[in-house]
Structure formats: C-alpha cells, structure tokens
Image (cartoon, rainbow, N blue to C red; front, side, top):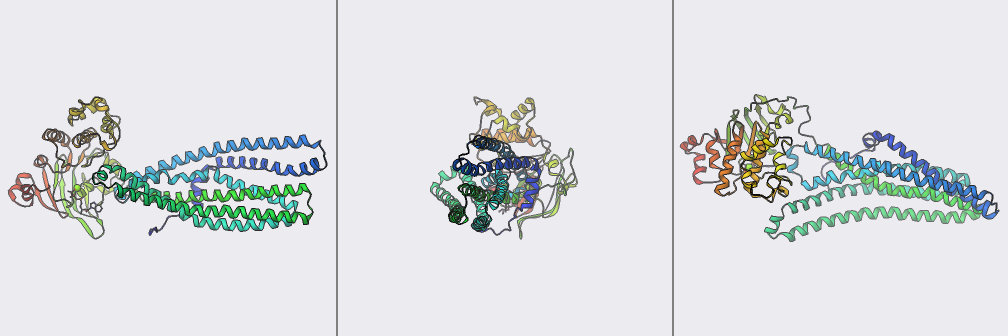
Length: 578
Ligand SMILES: Nc1ncnc2c1ncn2[C@@H]1O[C@H](COP(=O)(O)OP(=O)(O)OP(=O)(O)O)[C@@H](O)[C@H]1O
Ligand SMILES: [Mg+2]
C-alpha cells in the first residue's frame, strides 16, 4: 500500500525538544542509575583476572574474601539500581503516554466535522490509543539503556585496549560491520512500522463498523463477506509483522554470528600474543560486555524505530488544523437574541460541485424555519451551516448581525442545541443521557425536561425509571423513545438556537402525538431550524423554505404555498418525502 500524501516525519530534534528535554531531570537520574549499574556490572569481569591468576593459579587465598565482597556488593548495586530504574522511568513513560493520549483526543475533538466524514471512527480510536504507546521506549528504559549501553561499550573498549590493542582492533572490525548492518536495517524497518500502525487502524476501524452494524450484516446475511474482509486485514497485518521480523532477526543473527567470529579470532590470537589465563578470561569477559550492549542496542533500536513511527502518525493527526484556533474567531458572544440571516450563501463539499447556490433568508429570533424538499436537495447542509459544522464558501451567515465566521465556536455553540435524525445516545442511564449537556442541572430542572418531553410516559413503566441502562447508542429503546430522550436533553440545555432533523419514522399515533407535543414545547421561543417531515410541524412553521437542487425554490407559510399551487403544493399533495 502506498500513501500518496507527503508524510510528516518526526525528527530527532523535535522529539528531543518536546519529549526528552522536559524530562531531563528524571532522565538524568535514570542515566546516573544506569552508569552506576553498568560500572558495578564491570566489577565481575574485572575480578576474573585476579581470581584466575592470583587465586586459582598462584593460590594466594588472602585476596579471596576481599574479591568476593567486591563482587557481591557490585551485584547488589546492580539489583537495586535496575529496580529503581524501572520504577522511575517506566512510571514516567506511562504518565507520558496518558498525557499524549489526552492531548490527541483533545485535538481530535477540536477538528471540524468534515474531518470525520473521511475517517473510520475505529481507526481513530486506534490512533489515539496505540500510536502513542511507542514513547514508552523513548522515556522508559529504552533510551537510557541505549546511552548506558554505549557508555559500557566505550569503557569496555578502553579496558580491552589496555589489555591488548591489536586484539581489540581485531574484534572492532566485525563490530563495525554489525553496526552498519543494524543502521541499514532500521532505515528499512521504520516504514514497515509506520505501515503497521496504519493497517492496525484500518482493521480496528472495520471491526468497529462491523460490530456497530451487526443487525444490517445479519439482516442481509453478509457475515461471510465481513469475515473475508477481516481475514484480509489480519493477513496484511501478519505480512507486515513478518517483514519486520525478518529484518530484526537478521540483525540479531548477524550480531550473534559476528560475535562468534570475534571469539574464534580471540582464541586463536591469544595463543600468539602469549596471554595469561587471567588475561584471556578478562579479555573475553570485557568483550562480552562490549558486545552485549551493541546487540542489545539493535533491539532497543527497533523499539525506538517503532516509537518514531508511532509519533510520525500522531504528529500527522496533531498537525491537522482545528476548527477554531482563536485567531479568526475572535468575537465572544454573550446572551444572544438569535436573529440568524443567510446572505447569498454558497457551499460545496467537493470543488466544482456546488451543493448550495446563493441561499438567502432570515430567521428572526424565536421563529421556526422549516426546510422541505427532495432528498439530497441540501437541507441538512443548510442546517450544518447554521450549526457552524460547515463554513460557507461565499456569502455570509450572521447571528444578531455578527458574521458567524468571526464568532468563537465555543460561545456560539453553548447557545445551540441539536436534535438529529439518528440521535446520539450514550451507553448509560436515561438520566445520564438527558443530563449530558448540563451535568450540573438540578433535579427539578431535570424532572421538568422529562415531563415536557413526555419521557416519564414510558420511564414510569420501567422498573428502574430514569436509571434504566439503555445500551450502546440506545439500542434497548424504541425509535420514538430515543427521540423523546433527545428532545428532553435539548429542553434541559435550553438553547437559543435549535436545529432539528426530524425523523420520518412511522411512530404509532399515540407516541406521535407525544412527540408532537414535546417538540412544540421545545421550539417555543427559540430560533428553530427544522428539517420537517411532519405536516404538523410544517404547518406551525413561521416560514417554509422549499429547497431544490441547492436553491430556495419557494418560501412562505403553509397556506400561502398551498394556494400558490407550486412545488410545495406538489410535494404536499403527492405525499412525496417532505
Ligand atoms: N459529507 C459530505 N461530503 C460530500 N458530499 C456530501 C456530504 N454530505 C452531503 N453531500 C452531498 O450534498 C448534497 C446535499 O446533501 P444534504 O445532506 O444536504 O441533503 P438533504 O436535503 O438533507 O437530503 P435528505 O432529505 O435525504 O436528508 C447531496 O447531493 C449529498 O450527496
Ligand atoms: Mg438530510
């Protein structure tokens, strides 16, 4: 899979500035611990020479207790430091992960609704949760180990040179080859890791959709198809992991092979160079101490590569511009009256395909504007513009005479309420769902909203009343019940401007009349835009806009339009979808 978009790549400098530097203190402590631990780690190989030459060969037993104490203390220091290291750094890494997750989620919610039109929600979930995981390796023990490893390797090389410079040179050669192989391998692996994040997001996204649409899938007997799609995704993931495994295992094996080669060389050379048994053992031990971190580094290297790949993807998301960065939308609204005016508004989702053409109308404070028209004519788009989910391409929308594009979204939307066709309910209780826009509302206000929307009419029959848990997206309720909860929620929010996408669902006449009554209460005294299908709502409207092909074809009140015998009359009498 190739990505046509240019990739935003995270540089080491950027990571250093944003992730490493702010944690310099803790990382410094970590580094100090690593140095102590590594220094202690050098004691046992150093001890091999006196042990071999003085104690085993010359049987100078006086030195033994001292030697044993040194080694024991060194081992103890190692144990304590490695414990502290994990505790300090791993905890910090997890803290960073949670901070990053929150930041990404915060940014995500500030992106325009248009952004979400092109994204799978499950894929975004994976980007918030998984992509930041990698930094565990940056702040966690990974980076510090790497630095510690380099230090140990350098110190070991110095020791090795002091024992025998020529032999050292000999083992440095295969090590350099190994270093080059490793670097090369990581430049190959990084895109593979990047790709992996993408595939995971893709697969998770599809799975989430499958689960959300389980009724449709079963209804059309399409399980086999979904199974196939998922299998393909999982297979892709497998192939990706396989690719990176091949590279990493190649690095590890070539490391082992070159180390082996070096040891063979040492064995041979030590004969020529006349080393003592102690020197040989010490040399070998230091060699291991030099090589071990290098091999370990290749592991850490792949962890860091993974971290960078994840950060690349996170950065991509964080670089997506938010809908209100406070530079253009500088006007804060206080209490608004709610006069909304569209002046020559045009809009298109895709360039060259205008959806709205020069729409002009005004909705005075407290009035009800009904939008009717054939499917796809642009009604939801007009509502989306009024809700600031979309911005006009040309023309302007004003609220109390102020250009809506200059108004801070926060101050506008706090006075806006929406009841959408496929209304959104959370997993949780009915009470929580109604309280959602105003969690601190009083019990009295809540009860008032519940009554006004006739929610009590059905909750009174539930054993747990308002505390009934309604399942994800409210699946445990009927369409009409869900709608009444959404209406209660909007009544409680008490917005100045209300946007209603009325459902066409065939409710029984009884709940229909409940909903009619509750809608009436809801719309009272608010500037309302309603995409109306119900005749009762349309009749009450102060103005009806008949939208056809992105233009307002007719406007007026119900009786006027009927009299006119135009498009509205047609829609109305044919009982087409209005
Ligand atoms: N997110 C989008 N991206 C691209 N095109 C879109 C998007 N949303 C809607 N459109 C297109 O814009 C046009 C108007 O859509 P809109 O949703 O406003 O129609 P509508 O009048 O609300 O229809 P309905 O009565 O079926 O809800 C349609 O042709 C539709 O294909
Ligand atoms: Mg619509």
